Image: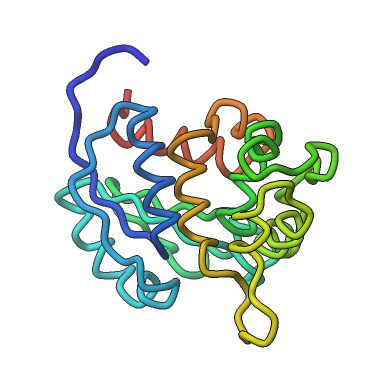
Length: 202
């Protein structure tokens, strides 16, 4: 990326993994991170979205949530929850969750989590439950800490294990290749383009 004057951007996200992702995206496009709010779930973000949109009249805001099963497509969801975004608001949706963006770097994910690349989905955005895909892949990992930490313990009643978030965050920081992933994820590619456009409207 060419050198530009960094424009501070405020972010709002669902959780710690999403924070790691947007920080890496910001670095990739040359945006300065002013603050990252949320990290308390999707409901927290959506409940404050209108207020953030008001704030975006005076400063750049970038809000990222998962699509999950809330709508058939991201465009329909965006139009429903934020039909009139402010000029400096970028409301983006990961299809169907942030895990699909991470799975989109198939080679990097396979190396980090100790699984066979051939077992990763070719089209992660087509998966109805990317988080479940990550957990099931981890059950076949060659790495003990992945096998023991990403899937939930039997009887825990949880959908993920104790190390799920921390290992995803480590993967984002150390292995995840944004340029590779964006070629395999339309929503990630668009999210990066919109973030770049926020700091350089030309």
